[in-house]
Image (cartoon, rainbow, N blue to C red; front, top):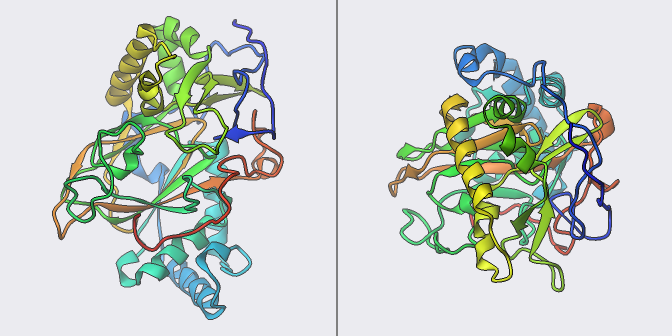
Length: 373
């Protein structure tokens, strides 16, 4: 067992739930193995879609439609949408079961069968945000204050809109056509709604970080020990004036009998842009090994138009293959980040503030843009 001393703080300056000072470690002992529903086999689940796909019924769609109609009549901004003004009836029970499964089951789920193309863009956003309000509190995803994001290629050479350089180290990878390595997002839950699959590629992959932990203990216990140590993570320029440009945090934290994983290769690899930082070769090798292991053992799925995927970030790593677009077939997903009420799901978060708003505190104007920007 490994013991790590705690230097974690709360409230005063945070990023993705982590303190901006200290190394965000927790004094704890790590389990010899993780068992239960959360430690699932990806290839086995690929053959058992009934365990993680919920097919919407005609009644579910009618319930969503009446909640949408209610919200639109109020003429409120999208950022005001909530369970109170998007009043689901029977479908609410489905969503609460999905949330329970995310935190005390598989850690993810997929809703399939919603005819999203039958609606205009504002209605699409309202439906997704309204459904999401039953999962948790929306969280800004970038320094622009977007509480709803667009996962779409916005780089030079894009089939639709050219805003960023894909090779710039501070360009967020979701705004490119590149493959996204296995990683977690900076929230309790991330949700995606597929509007367009694109021309080719863009396969979605998930793996349980609990299964990954078990496999690494079997195959490369040295990497597990390395992941218990603090690593440095690039904030990609999205920091307030005077704040540090990167933070220190271990990829693995065991807290209150739960294993939390923070993993983002794109936030570690770019640390080399800071001249004062030495990027250790053994950590780069560990990243490569983990990526290859995940690719072999992950659950792979193709998101269909109308699919809504919900993933709990502390025990699930997700990835995406590279993709290609055409002017009339450009991949486009909507994304939401959520903070959940830890008491409602029976969890304690190691670094979260009590108000559940622990990111981009310097962003004052939250928005839900209708198009990618």
